[in-house]
Length: 148
Image 1 (cartoon, rainbow, N blue to C red):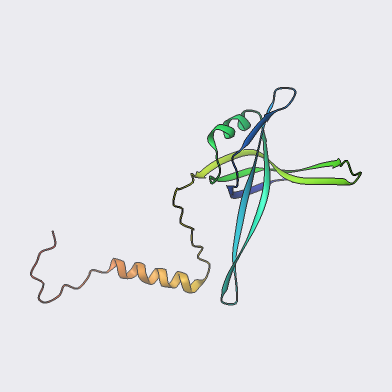
Image 2 (cartoon, one colour; image 1 turned 90 degrees about the vertical axis):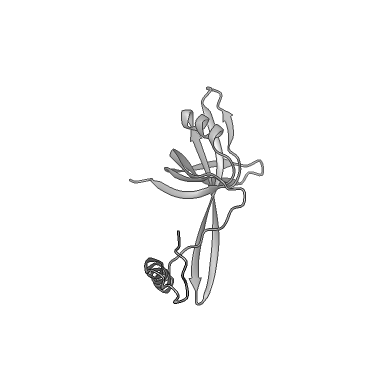
């Protein structure tokens, strides 16, 4: 059986570190993943939120190095917690247990949202602009200045 998760997302809050009775550090944080897609001529976006848990040395390291807004690659597995609440109902929660986390980008102060290019027409426009940038500009007839 295979249980493998690979996710790129942005931290939604600062990591929180706790210690188990055995002394093992446990760090928890949330990650958001956004999906952009086009319906007709309209772009839509949906957000998904995941809880992440890490243990041991990785947990200690991430608690000091990460904060809200960091973009990370998470490699791990899914884990399901099950419990019975005080009301007698059964509950469960699925989370990601991270085995490796890599920082891709630190948060920026004035963050500009990235544009996703999926349409071939957008790619054609960009390719055309790149071609035009590569061509030398024609010098005007009355332009006697040397551009140094």
